[in-house]
Amino acid sequence: MKKKEWKFVYDEEVCDALGSNFMGIITDGKRFLFFQALPDEDLNDERCYIYSSMMSMFSRDSEELSYPWTKENDELLLKALNSLDEDSDRYCGENSIFHEFFAS
Image (cartoon, rainbow, N blue to C red; front, side, top):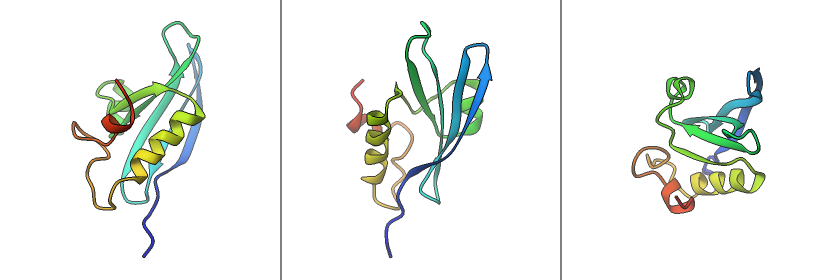
């Protein structure tokens, strides 16, 4: 049986006081992460925030990871997730795989 791969499966553009930002879902079909990409404080660059729950995303706390929102960093995120064993719980939490792929 082929291992399921993580991928961005849904995003939606949301317009608000900061302009437009994106929210969506990343999944391997079994486990889910949620993301929000929005302008930084200076409104110059966009950052992507990864959350393990929708409630954390809406209250904008407890993100698993944040990074400058670029195609290369999205690919690095998926590479990290897809490096995990299929039954691994390291896709979120203090011991998440992100600490190995993204420097603080």
